[in-house]
Length: 146
Image 1 (cartoon, rainbow, N blue to C red):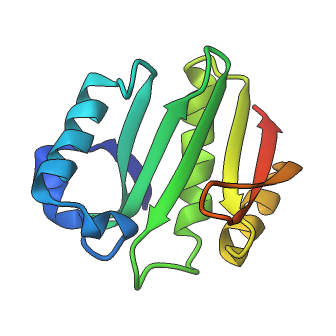
Image 2: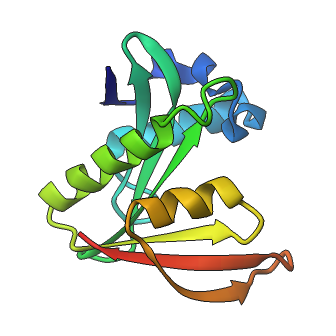
């Protein structure tokens, strides 16, 4: 059964197999500290662990853009992708955000990330616009009322 749990220092080793795996021990610790404090650069931030029963299958982050707007994004570990964990985790995270009073969810997706585009569209997000980021990559902005 899929569930989201707050991250703890016990999860430092679980970053391996994700994009977070390249972070140093200190960077991982800092991310966990920010999540425990629910604050990143003055804004609400929470980093949760996605479990399937007792197995860590990925992570979910929530970041507030304002009192009403939040973004959330899954990072599913290699070996667990394309099994519906991202969809279930993001569905749970959006429901959690709604209960916390957020009314709009946004997401930035690389134009080449076919899986994330499909996930956002399956979740009912609508593409608002595209833009070119600082690295020269096209990013799609998705938006959804909660």
